[in-house]
Length: 45
Image 1 (cartoon, helix red, strand yellow):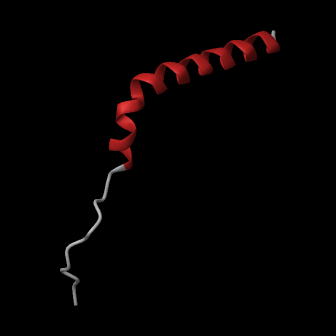
Image 2 (cartoon, one colour):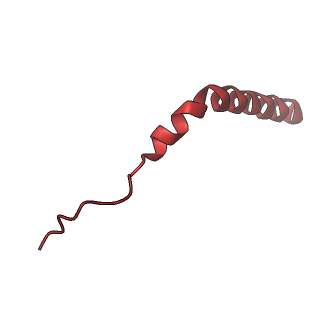
């Protein structure tokens, strides 16, 4: 009933593929978020 054949391809985790880019993604995302919050605060004032 069960398939015990070995797989030819490696299952790479999505999180593990993103982790090396986190030192670049987090500051850029934070900067964009701060800019958007400041823009909303100025627009609402």
